[in-house]
Image 1 (cartoon, one colour):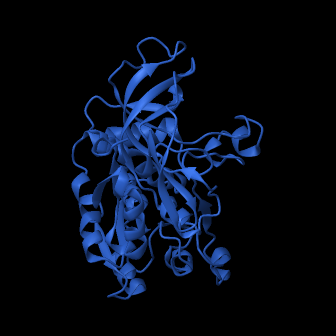
Image 2: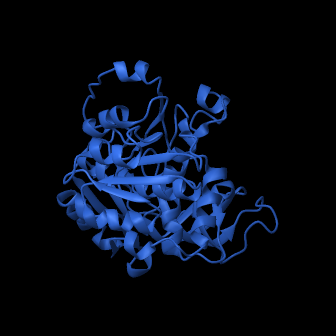
Length: 349
């Protein structure tokens, strides 16, 4: 089998892998059809993702077909031919030995091993995975299923921010994770303000549920947020970019007693005017990965409504053999991309 591997910083290539063989009793074998590139893949290519191991097969945003079931997979849970996506997270501590897992938050496991980051990913033809990590849909395409995982990251951030229909939520960034935040907050009935520097991406954000948009490169962010919030600022600010300036702006612009949720990894140290933390009595929250058994079904249900602008969100689809080139192009012009997908069926995999 062919696989796209990140070999080292700045170098990804197609390599040959052995077929995984029959699945273990608790596993299913899936035929991978479509895989999305993650923002972490880009940062792995750039060498700026602190969790990335090299070399590693990339890929954890998956649309696939079940082709074989292990003997211990419960009867009726899956059948051969089911269309599925997968939760790519694995609790390396053993599922209960670190404080995060003991507290019921395995998504933040001390030794989380995400596919394509700290263990081999799915940007290849066949993969064996635990059946408990699979989620199926009878109506979604493989392209849509490959969007589920990155959107769950945004849904989880919305949950961390305790968003309700009473909230005004500002979201920095309209990449796929920011789009997940926008969609997740809109699903809860919140008023959503999308903030970006691309008018094109902001138009897509409207289709994903944003009530208002702000191009912060063209207008005064503080002034515009004030107009939309009676001068108070949003009750929740979510950062899905990873820049010091947006980290600071969340604290500066959120309302008194508001909530700030950080998803992005800042690529440089962040300096704050820390008095805002106390004066506003803020809740400042991190958000990592997702709560799979809650967020995967929620996103699948949202996508099954058929209202999500899939074709607007997916910027480009390439065959596996062009995957390395697509990473280079994305690195050279990141603002032009929301989501790149790899179609394994268009490859000699």
